[in-house]
Image (cartoon, rainbow, N blue to C red; front, top):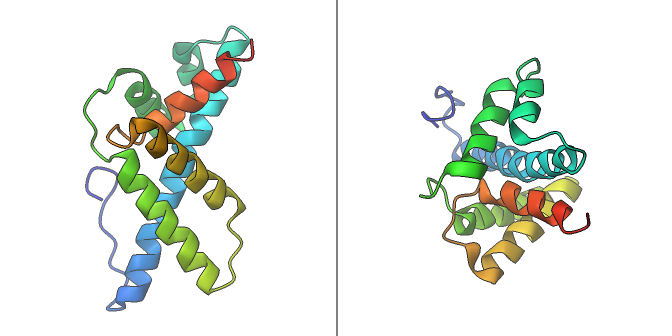
Length: 141
């Protein structure tokens, strides 16, 4: 995770490390989709991505929000594909089911990433899930 943050040693348990990785990726991937929806909602009322990013500057979403909005709108080459994201979300939901952990949001994110992969976007960057969600809102204007 050097591109996202520093490494954290969790101990020698492979199971704990795998669960932490899946939990982190689930959070990041779900956030990307939700940020796209929020950006689309703001834009549907005339608040463009630049203004919305400026709003995020004063919140805990400052760095990640700006980075993801930039990726949604400009990145062409995938750093982590939607196909790989779908795989991680599938594993995260399966792992949660093993411990009876609720997964409403992770499951919804998994369904979105599955859809995007099915419609031919699997090779695109995971941030495009947010861009896709943003465009969905525009269709109802």
